[in-house]
Amino acid sequence: MTRLTAFASAAAITLALTSHQAVAEMKTEIVDYQIGDETFSGFMAWDDSVQGKRPGILLVHEWWGHNDFVRDQAKKLARAGYTAFALDMYGKGKLAEHPDTAKQFMQEATSNFDQIKNRFLAAKELLEEHETVDGDQIAAQGYCFGGAVVLNMARSGADLDGVVSYHGSLSSPMKAEQGKVNARIQVYTGGADKMVPAEQVAGLVEEMQQAGVDLTLVTFPDVLHSFTNPGADEYAEQFGLPVGYDEEAAMRSWQGTLDFYNQIFDQ
Image 1 (cartoon, rainbow, N blue to C red):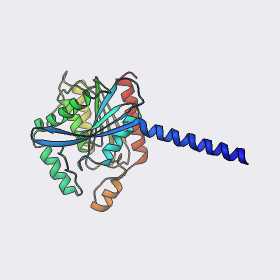
Image 2: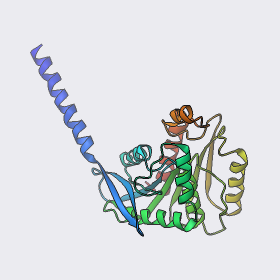
Image 3: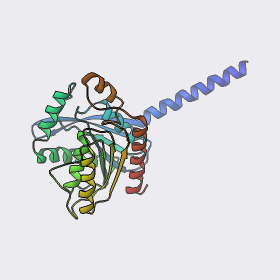
Image 4: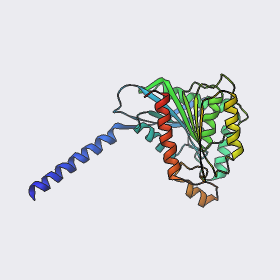
């Protein structure tokens, strides 16, 4: 009995030390940065146990703003071996709690493309300069509003290896041009997404085919908008929005994203 208790205690100590070590390896940092006269607040995450430089991934938030959801996604990427920077498109402190405010913030940010582009590229430069990042290996992923942003950055010819859009708007006044898009593109969308109807999906495929872009598009049948966000069901109930979390679609799109990054970064 005594020996068994001692063994259990030793195992508990080992587990505690292992858990502490795992926590210690995950590094996160809130990064305040200036663009012109405005302050923005991003979130950097990386695993300190990974040796050497590694690819960097930019994350662009939903229309609600830079919140815990996008930070959690950055941590997941860090655990997968990347350095992730969840950027801020709205400005420090601009976090919406109501769709009307979210719409206002989004419209302000997208009032002209140069503003969006400058905010994206400023964050990209911060990520590239991080001590853990190989600046020649950068991708971007975005959610809803953020999905539209990363697609437009690809259309604009931004120096990115890959772009992933989750339930993002697929139509844009800006169109991909032959030879201009550098990034390979993945898109995940819901078949029942009222905000991204079938015409948008078909339009994106035609656009990217005509421009000769490497596009992979996955549609999940009967899945609503914001399917990656566990908080989507609460938004639906509180505000009557046509959104909803789908665990399987979230899991499959995440695994597909990791496989995509393995391919484009030859890992």
